[in-house]
Length: 165
Image (cartoon, rainbow, N blue to C red; front, side, top):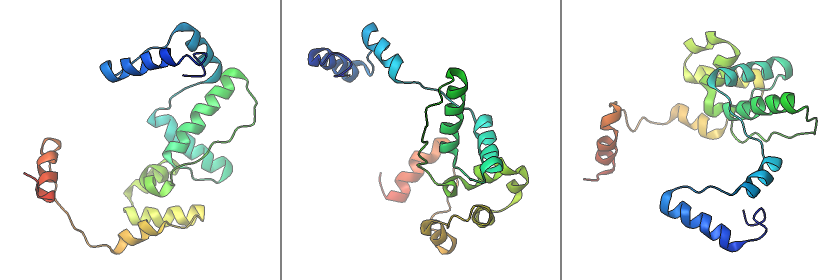
């Protein structure tokens, strides 16, 4: 904002004060115009995320996580809409092991019948990417909490577990 406002610290201060007081601020038209030339944003729903995971695996043999699938889907739409052929890097920041069921179901809905650890093993078989140690450790970790509750009871249950009144 500082650079886009022509290094106008008072203008930026006003935006930040508005954010602190009201939870929002709106930049002026000059900044909006500059932002439009710098940024593009998009979204991807669950269906498109699933399709992207499946298509990426089928076309490249790469099992991406759900977050990376959203980035890829948004990028593909951007490239198609703008004809921008600039070489682009999409940095994957999550592991497909964190979203094993979603990733595996995107490849084949038949995977939905398998247990979570069977899916972990199948993801490893398909991708060759080692299972993170934290996931392996869960296989033999003792169950510490098995409380099941409704959404409206969650706060009370967490407090009870933590010994908070």
